[in-house]
Length: 186
Image 1 (cartoon, rainbow, N blue to C red):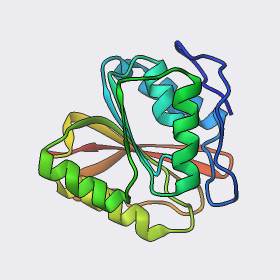
Image 2 (image 1 turned 90 degrees about the vertical axis):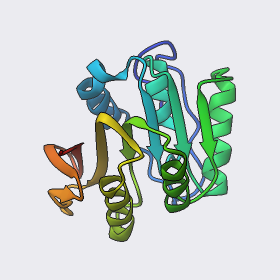
Image 3 (image 1 turned 135 degrees about the vertical axis):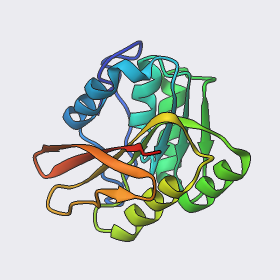
Image 4 (image 1 turned 60 degrees about the vertical axis):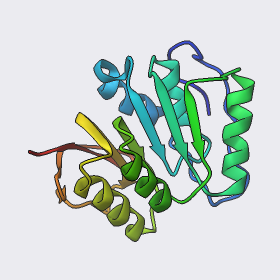
């Protein structure tokens, strides 16, 4: 696994040990960031179920102002810290070592706004998709105006068209994976 583009291009990233984390493939991450390219510069990027932190680090590498990593698994948190240290990233990030539910509720209370949200829960845990997308779609205090939310999921396990104010506007399929892109409706 490596950083695809930007200031950390081609740098190798560590992944958490074990089978509990399924990192987003380099190819799929490249697809995501090619679509997001016009939005990345200066954005606040939220990496939910962050795993190794590869997506948030990719965002920082490509010019995001800040990346917030949300991860509760100790091996994944250790991998994120290892990757940030190896790339000498000392600022512009926040690491939330809590559940996605707890973190999203705190962001909402503090009205911490995000321009781009990427979520990649375990494919087999449909409840996590419903929970996270539902919270994001029903909150007026987490998503910045014109925010985009991207959910990586199993291709054969489609997500809903809408979650509260979130409406899917694009679906990309690649191998066994799919990416659902959502924006807010007024």
